[in-house]
Length: 267
Image (cartoon, rainbow, N blue to C red):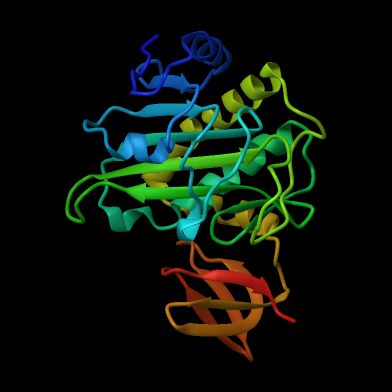
């Protein structure tokens, strides 16, 4: 086993236990667990090289989500990790990657008996209409070269501390999770990503679109999408083959693909 050394205090025993649980993560991927770091995405973005690297943190002191939101959690109450991976593709070929990640994470949780999982476009995991977790993808590559993506994942194992949330939070466990829960869920999600990456690299988001639409939280509901100074209102038709969100706006189909977009159920 290769353990990725990082500046925060490493928990090598937990990393060893996690490596023993995974079955699809390639042996040449580096894997590490740290007691605390600023942000697993930030740590991996600062790295160089092409090897795939998984970094888990029991606590993030400056964790963040989409649109600069903070990810707040007590140590051990959430599963937070990032995967750095280089694709032999241009960055513009990664459209829909965050949606594909959401699909395989939802599938992995469903296999563990969590039946009330839904996906909110473009990168939130929901449970019973409350936010369970999210995906944050950041690129560290030139537009014309091979694309290196850092895929950040955060899942609430227990409810986070009280705060001002865009969505009321949900959790996987009714009480504080133990070591076995952390290891089981962590290994399952790491394996899910490892299996997904080769298929996405070869075929893009298209093989995942039907599964995403089955998880679609807002399927056939009237929603309002805002971003980049614009606003659209229409019936949510789901994701397109490239990850774009399709809306039926009075009989005219509009696609929302990029930009800082928020999605809310219309009043």
